[in-house]
Length: 322
Image (cartoon, rainbow, N blue to C red; front, side):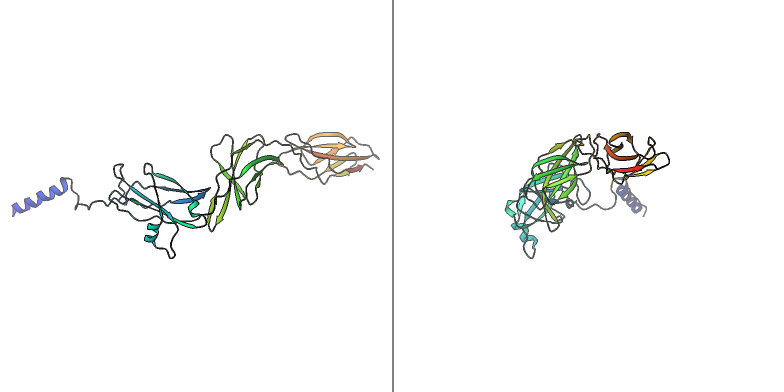
């Protein structure tokens, strides 16, 4: 009995102290994770497909370089009703490099103009095992959209006005400052023109434009236009002040008017009988004390911006101290 107990203790020690924990695990299946970020867009005459190639298995084990992965990327029109196996055998397989985790593939779109294609990817492990196909991207394909040409930028009041040539349903406009790296979409237009009102004088802006066409919930797009660089110049004076009123007082004539709303407004000038009597006025009121009783005076006001542009004169307001 003591001998049996000793044998049992030795076996238990071997299981716990010799590096074994529990029962042996089954061999790893080495199935790469499913692709979750497949995306595709028609750009010019190409279909651009992007996704991340998984580098770990469903057991969270790394897929080493020596373990070859087989990336099966396919594109083609679906049957109606859809049959996965039929689609797999009739669709086109697109070669994909596995040297990096990020896959970027360009495919000629001309074969499918006027059709809708299904795009999906299935990544097989070194033993051929896989989790299955990614979610399908359903992409309507249209004839290649024209690249906007001849982009011209001109000064507009507190803005930059853009025009170009292209026949497309809609356009996207992109902008960045000359010293920036990233582009930002600032707007869309259904005509070959756009006015950018979010500018600051003294800065240089760069613009690019692309044509777009929406089918269902997908957009086809053209290649980007050539870049247009432009530094706006403030050539536009403010509006003439309005609402000028002259109110006679006991020893002065009090002037009041409406405030200008231009974002680059700087100040006002006041004229009496055609002669300048005050500058650098920032309020919408002025008191003229250099007046005599019984004399009729005619007043006008102009507005100036930060660039020194002066508006036309306001309508005349007359006043006389009784």
